Image (cartoon, rainbow, N blue to C red; front, side, top):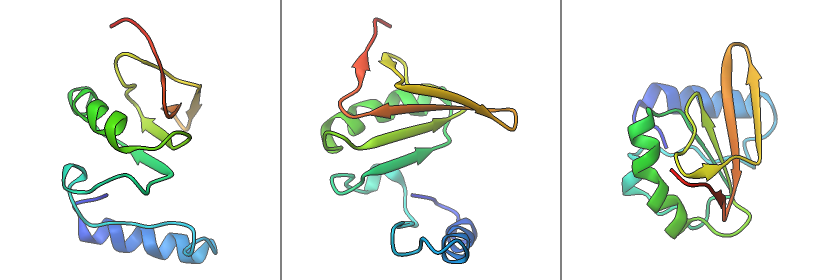
Length: 103
């Protein structure tokens, strides 16, 4: 989900140029307005307060095995399966249902 139509268009073009347009869906919408039940991968770049606010939505809508990748900020209370640093950015991978930690 992305609110900026230009970024959605660019993402679709990039997927097409890489030959994966049939495996990815880009939606122009606010994440809170979309049901995530069919998602197998959600990639987010949001501030820490937003990632904390999205946690209940992810927990209630994403199916077991779905992946959540957060860029730059982790999800409080969840333990990532894997972390990676690429190009000065940090990424956190979670697989539903996530292992939880004490906040």
